[in-house]
Image 1 (cartoon, each protein chain N blue to C red):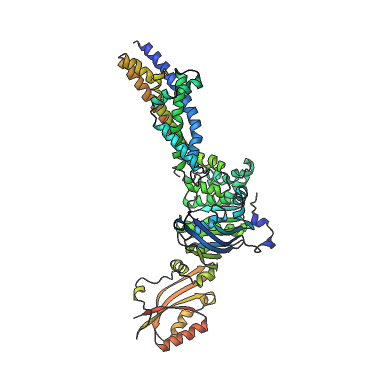
Image 2 (cartoon, each protein chain N blue to C red; image 1 turned 90 degrees about the vertical axis):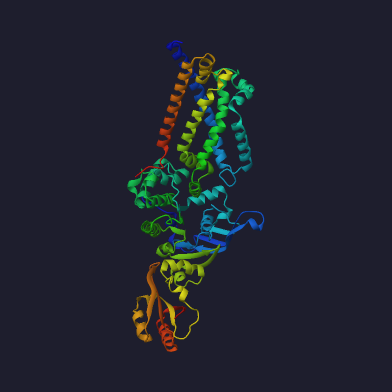
Length: 365
Length: 222
């Protein structure tokens, strides 16, 4: 049998018309009583999650991302504001409505949360048993799911007999069992090594492409967002500080939190020795330190070589990297050259002419 | 005392002990199990939030557990008579044994359930499970090894308790040891009783451990 999913079944013409998830002025406070005991986890969140896309929400631990994702399937309730999932307002659902919604929204977890007492097969079958499906139908459904996640031969194994990556694959199969239209991923790769992380991300990407499933993931790893998310929102202290297409947000990062998270993943962090030596203002004979950012068309041109020729001065490279963000190349190069007015003028002319994005980081002696 | 007499006495007493322990253990655990589940799931913000009832239940259980068993036996004689029609004999002894089992087993069940990773409950909720489904499909299933060990401990304690019900004519191995071994100065009877009890406890514990190991899939190696 083939696996069909709600998102695929719905008319394609409708796709993109209304967001899969919409947060409207959502606030979540924990604790009750006077203000002192209250903790504001989310503060006026406005955000939409596009249908059929993979959207990443990134932030440091404690930023509120776990709370945010749990509002979508009603594991947490918003203090104020609206959370709308595919046209249905979560806050207005009763217990029964909430259970129906949860069967349409799969979820995977950092620590997998598989039942140790059940085999891989029975773990995947659990949501179907809960939904009251009969044994025969469950059997027909679980087999193909295990095949889909590449564990067709591990059906009778217990979680303790599987590796971390395999456990997460079982978690994914279980989340897909009720044919959801939305998959929530709560730090699903944070407990895995880089190689396994990559294979799980590939699987999520494949599921998104083949089944048309909308994926909403939260993570603290830029690497994850960079690899699979087409859209991203950056959350910091309960507020969305930046959101948009992943490539745009990454290349034009404005907020300090985004930059900090990015610098680790994109290799744009300055070398240790350089930072204490950077001065905000130049003195005579100092060299200017500039970050050059290549993306889009500039990423494909031999600009570094031309820079040296155009400046007519020695240029030294202090740091640099070339990455791929949401499938597009992105390079960052930190260079230093003399801060003579002549050289600076030639440099600025060159940047303007080529469309190279730059950022002056400071001056060194 | 002849060997034949000793064997006859031992067999009869062992039968009484087994009868008391089996019936009290079974009924007491059947009552204790749901109470244990309730204790573990009715705290604030849990599956069946009822913090007040939870506190009251906890207090009653603590009170029952801190009452010395021999006092419990005597204190509930009117109740025992109501249930069995008599206050002496093996059947009468089963009543206080059952009542002592309930809070003991309930606390052990509570502890086994509280040990389960909260993430599993969250995962089940995210699948759209009802609280009752979570109890049966997640909590009881995952706690099965722990509950098996809890039941084993309960039976072992019951064997100990059952030695005290000689006070109300309950009979059993403990009673035999006291009456013959102690009061009639027959150390060989006392010795035989102790040996049989040790054997019995060993048997119960080994069987319980083996069963719990079979249920426990957490430490399987690939």
